[in-house]
Length: 275
Figure 1: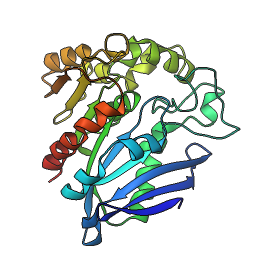
Figure 2 (figure 1 turned 90 degrees about the horizontal axis):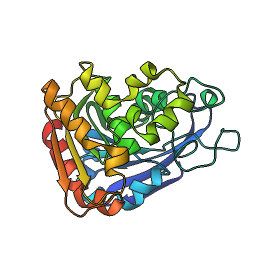
Figure 3 (figure 1 turned 30 degrees about the vertical axis):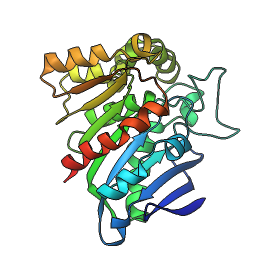
Figure 4 (figure 1 turned 90 degrees about the vertical axis):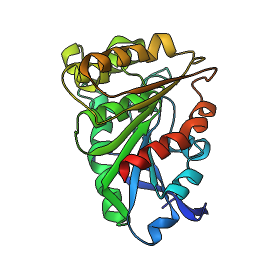
């Protein structure tokens, strides 16, 4: 365990472990609210965006006060494998810090970039075994940007696992935008039909559904029109009858100033559905 400190009556943990999925050490943070001392608490998983580690939301997300008040645990994994032996390329939107929550099938990425297996299988099993105060039957998931893409696709492909799903400025149709095309072509190969399993719009158009969905985007986000394309999610949800609350927040950008402003609202929205 890297650290264990008191915060808002609970415990903020940072833990490093050897991952069988990635074949590397992986680090995650976990906030246990004070209610975890008396019994089980629901778990919210947060997936971070490009260039981030577990530390970005842990340091800047401003979730602990709301989680302590609501009795929610908050889990934040890294965004990619790390280490000297892990393949990387020039550019902040590929390689380390940019795992896109997929299991890479193309060499040399396939050796370590197995973030889908890590966040959907290995990490949940690990925290369930090590922290019995977590109620794994009451889970929610959210994320930002690339992590919003991850949260949506993880939930859409595992119906019934998450009672509440939200996202901050998600990449909703990565198969259609430069960030996604760059990552998917390297990690998953040239066959675009394979990409559809990691594309929220394509999944909804193909019949996948969520019980409800909350999404916030900022109108001053510089990536809104080229990379995020929230209107594509809006269109797909409307055509499919998928319940969606899409809020366009005036003046907000892509940063943690935006995320931290609306974090407590997302957590309250999740808590209603988790109970």
